[in-house]
Length: 162
Image 1 (cartoon, rainbow, N blue to C red):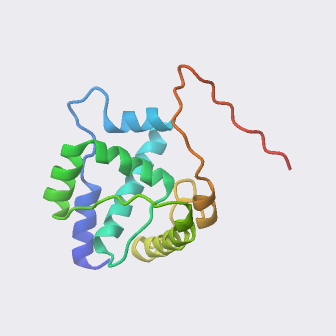
Image 2: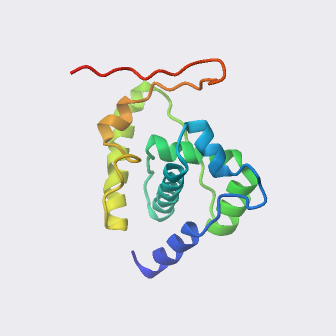
């Protein structure tokens, strides 16, 4: 990273995504909605910040992991925090989230995701954590998600057979 990038990265890293006056914070909600432990949620927030940093310094589009995308989706719902405090005041730019247009873009996003992982390694001088940034093949193939009300439904993982 050059000096300008280091300054930007530190600003992003130090941004407090949680409202300290809230009894149910952003991170609490992230844990609840994704069934994540607090430690994992905090790690994904750091990775989300790294992703935003990559967007800010890149001339090309970036593709997040699903975990990072979940943080981004939730942050977008916190409109004051995302649009005013984060984008306008801290980053001085708007960062929009563009959804996929369908299955036919799978190859495009797989390639773009692979490029994002390469760029991550170049800028942070380390491999992204595999439990948050899976391989491009896994990222693109594991997309069968649905929101489930856990008060009315049980969730039983599939058993894997060799």
